[in-house]
Length: 249
Ligand SMILES: [Zn+2]
Image: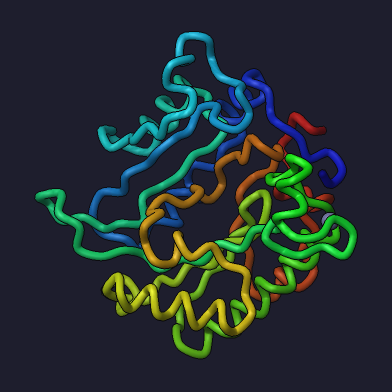
């Protein structure tokens, strides 16, 4: 793993969500959305780090859909001290019926074939399916720029987010929310054919959860960070202070 990227401890997660998690910024992310956002946490599926009392629930996805405000969401996160926090890209009406879904793309470094570490299959063989190196991180950043430009030809509201491992691209155009599952599938296929290593599950909509911007990625101890297009060009996930939590100093 790149320098100083490692699992966060429970104490560090606690420290992050009590004093560092930027709630106003997270709220801003959702300001264009109407309807109530559902959140979700995974306590310790990959890290096996969890509060003892949640041993049974450590690997499950816990949905947080009953809350009064974001401060309340923060309190619930502090209760679980999860390795990961997500939100549901589905948009629901007042009767909890799905009326749309935010279109998103997930680019992960482990899907990149590395000149040193090989393909994902090679990495899996060595039980390093979730690891990546700085070179892969660099390659995936360049892919994110390319995918941003690809998407910007068709949509006007494209957002890039550093996920802690790779990058997410979100499309916030109204028409994108209304795409059918089949249209998403077709579009995901086009994006793959254009050479981008996306996770089709996310784009096609089967995986509806995506990391919450400004939350902590507890697998690598990095803050999930929205980036402007021109920031993507020089972004350095290993050293950029904006994505390094205080507990790493
Ligand atoms: Zn590598």
